[in-house]
Length: 378
Image 1 (cartoon, helix red, strand yellow):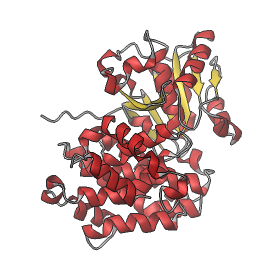
Image 2 (image 1 turned 90 degrees about the horizontal axis):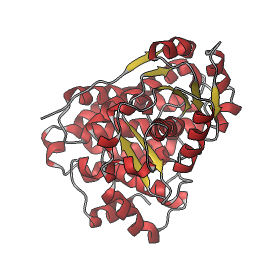
Image 3 (image 1 turned 120 degrees about the vertical axis):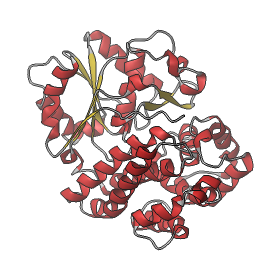
């Protein structure tokens, strides 16, 4: 049986950040903790959010690392409790939003954060007592603003997923204005993250027809606009469409992801310096080729339907088109260019096999399959 749930309230428009005070009132947040990072603060984007909260006593945690950690969650919880906060506003990319989701759990639930990780059986332990969260994305990539999950590096260095419908932000405020100053390389990497979400969830064998339709629309928007947004950061139409693709990718991946993400989650835990979206871009061509042999992908002509959305001639062109796009966006040529070594493969594969995305790939990968995907992605 298919379970289909969509998803939360979304405010999508240029200038939507000005609705932040209104949304706090709607949700019932009177003493928010804003979770962000130093880069968002330095770019002046945090101040735009604070300016939209006149009259509210606001606390700020601006030390989210590029890959959120359990230690950062603990530090933010201390600020949350010290200021007697009653809700959260995440302002930033997926890292800030996922960190805030970790705070939403840890500030309201007993025990270590790992107790609530998906692969530890923790999803049912996350209750409706989580702190309410409003998400304001400043990149167009993860789509965490409309997702039920968070990815956090816990104290034992595993990069784990935390999933519950209670973690879905009460409001997603998607304001493309906040992405206009995003640097080209970050635009490219986060944009490829969104495209990977659309493609990988569309290939998943799970039954969710609305997710399939949303994924294809997101793929069409993302693929047509990522180069424009990367080359001209002030292209408002491209920024709007890329933010839409990011949102749609996460609305769609409620259906499930696959080997691209099981590998990038694992490798991101092995080396937290590596950017998640860039890793997805590196793995996507090899995983597309691997999935082409899956019965459900062939039966439903999924590569051909993605090729149509991308303006390509046939499904056989998809994998190479991704590699060519990565090159045009000036992303790394492969994992080796990012510093990944072959002697790390066993550790990466161990984590991928345990990851929550492993079992929703349309073709279940073996150890040998993962070795070949890694080798092809070097």
